[in-house]
Amino acid sequence: MQKSKKYDKEFKINHLKLYKERGKHLDEIANNLGILKSTLYISVQKYKKYGEDNFPVSTSIKVCNKEVHHLHKELANVKQEENFKKQ
Image 1 (cartoon, rainbow, N blue to C red):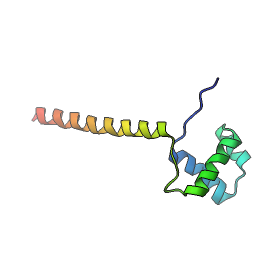
Image 2 (cartoon, one colour; image 1 turned 90 degrees about the vertical axis):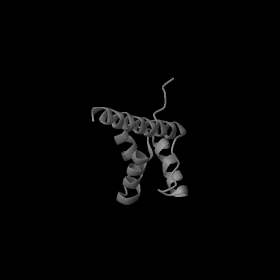
Image 3 (cartoon, helix red, strand yellow; image 1 turned 135 degrees about the vertical axis):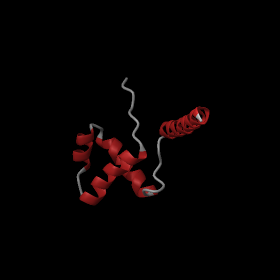
């Protein structure tokens, strides 16, 4: 069984705008992305229901983003400590 791909909010919204603003067909966008038309259709329905600002994001993406944010903060702290030790 193939593992499903997760796409972030920005990726989805950019391609939903192609559909909404430029009038491209779902088939064309799905083929270009290499995803199923049904997957794109579900995203279109969520976009219509929630809008861009409240567009739901996969839980796994949220967890990854939080972890990345935490790691960036930790790295900044380590760099700050190194700079302090050099002085």
